[in-house]
Image (cartoon, rainbow, N blue to C red; front, side):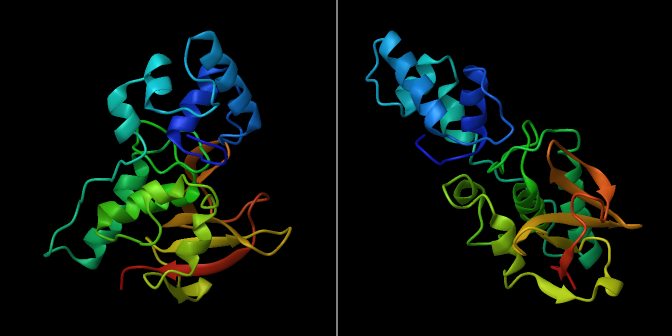
Length: 221
């Protein structure tokens, strides 16, 4: 782990040092804490958490390799209908209900995820691999806003807001700079399942925090 990365391992390291996870990023504050801890425990004081430092901190060696590489199990097959794919996507997303929003995270339902991490895992379960967006790539520097990549993905076809259906992806525009800054899964009845600070929940399709819908994206026809 190094400056700028995000994800569950960073979440756990920040938690280890009692740092806020309001924004889960490996920043200068983490580097300083890690460097001091390494020096006090006879390890090279690099400020970088490698496998050796991770396990000395008491974390599982297995988690070092597995924790940010989780891929949701496939819930569909070659005989699945459009509805089957949609319900597989939603069922996977519901596994995360009540978990925390964690920036740059796209891991298992044991932990939290952010908005695009949630959608990525839901798509995996439905049978879609939304490359170049991936669970591992998502935690790397510069990829926190993968909702922008999903917005432009060839898998996601734009439909009119008035034609929105269960299973569509709802993309939101920032009121500050016009960028795509959020995505949720439409459930019907003007509700979305999404990851928004500070939790994963079912919410109204628009509210005071995210009220500019930029696009309704359909994956399954």
